[in-house]
Length: 156
View 1: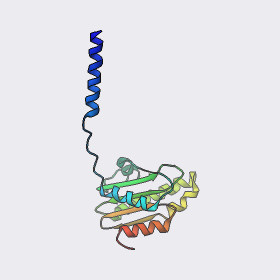
View 2 (view 1 turned 45 degrees about the vertical axis):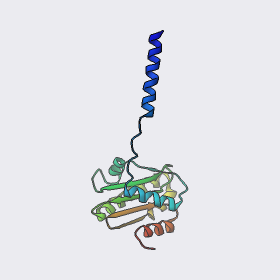
View 3 (view 1 turned 180 degrees about the horizontal axis):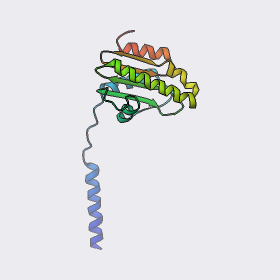
View 4 (view 1 turned 90 degrees about the vertical axis):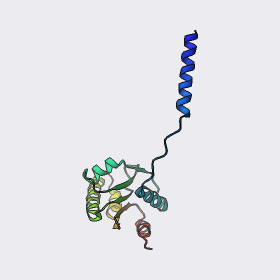
């Protein structure tokens, strides 16, 4: 009986120690992620967006190549929604734009088969570069997306 009681006490102490251990500091938010979150909040998109993992973005958008030093892409959770917002920091924005244009073309082709009503949004994506940053916004409100991207680059 004493053995069982000792085991239970030991397990409880272990549990308490592990629960009270200080948690790790939150990961630093990159410049590109901050920008995406600010733009998403300004656009007030109807659907929920979710961050794509960097390795997925590198594979889907950049064919596995290290084109960007930072990349953040948020995509609609609903497969029937083509909305997405991305900020990509690189030394060569022309190369980044080329990869993003290819990505958009592939997405248009894919969506035309499954959700043709979303192709218009992809065709009118806001894609703009400047000062080592490339921004991609795909949403229903194209004019608002242009305004927000222009404001990001310091133009109104």
